[in-house]
Image (tube, rainbow, N blue to C red; front, side, top):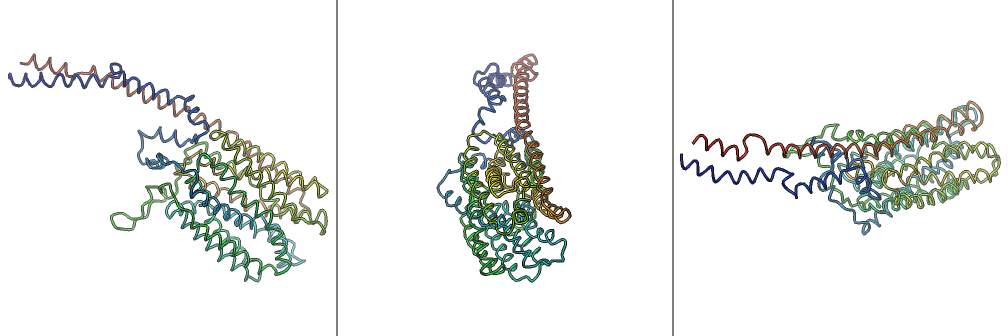
Length: 532
């Protein structure tokens, strides 16, 4: 009995020390840590810390989920948290390669007005009342499929990496473009040019957006502006080159020459060296056996739990139902309104030049706008794009159309260059591939539907005025929807900060209460002594 008492006397002081350390009130260091944690999690400090940096909802969501579900795919890995882009180095080579990708892919797509006129001459007949509608499907399907494939491309990017995905896509694009040069009617072009070539472009294009976030963060807006300006350079020059080649060597040989651009694109894809670790939940081998992840893991639907991203992913497609209509039908409209002698390629030149300027200027401006407030630039862009589309039928001279195209190109560049930076802000680097993929996939629907609907209106009414008026409405409505994103984002940050404060207070209260519960060292000592 005496030995047992001595043992209790030795253990009791140690237990008293432990219980004292568990009480945060009696431990100044613990009190300071808790106070610091509560201060850092306050809404004002959250907003201050994220000013000029990536104020992603993902960061708040991940903090909130850190004590919750460990399988939440939105939660970034420790490696991803610690990763810091080098802000240069090999990234400048990657930037040039991505610039060529944007130029070759969208330079060809944006010159579809020149191709559209050539396709009508090559495959059209005077008795076909739906000729414009049928021909518009080729260019519209091609542009739409680039975005429609994006959700699938994002999975390939997550699994195989940016380099393999981009190189494979460029190879498929070469096959599609080359096979298009051997068709004898309009029908096969729907598959060879509208689907096969476009799918290859999609697989080559999306990795060029994702890989930039591996090398840049502070300069991401500027770099995206430079990269997306590549399509402007091609949009400026390619219509004149295509017009010359179409007149000299014809449609089919022109398509074969364009394969050279895709070949260079395939070589450029080899520069995409990834730096951010791939998603850890996508494992195709387990215990030496082939294992296919579930569909829920392949498609990261959990990013739609971020309200601000969901609104952005649905608001932009709503704005794009009339976006691509001028690119397809403007050339034909100018010929009908002003005659055959007008050099309509100048209008594409104007759009291309100011679009490049807009991407460089607004890309740099976006670097100085904190967090998701960059969305306001897209709101302004959509308002002016919609307004300029409505101004096209009002212009009865070539000078007026030039002015409209200059403004349209400027704000078109603004809208495009900040898509990737906003995606990084909303969901973080680890989930940006799927976020961009879903967005571009949703964008495919208005891209595909818009131009053919405008073609139907032209065939039924006999002129393009109504089509251009209607094309200006969706961008204005979509821009109004996007205005909600910063408000919802800020509200989410405050809710997460408040939740973090509540969790901290509960833990402090639990630790404080545990010091006075039965079973502490003092109570055990008294009970044992009384028994003895």
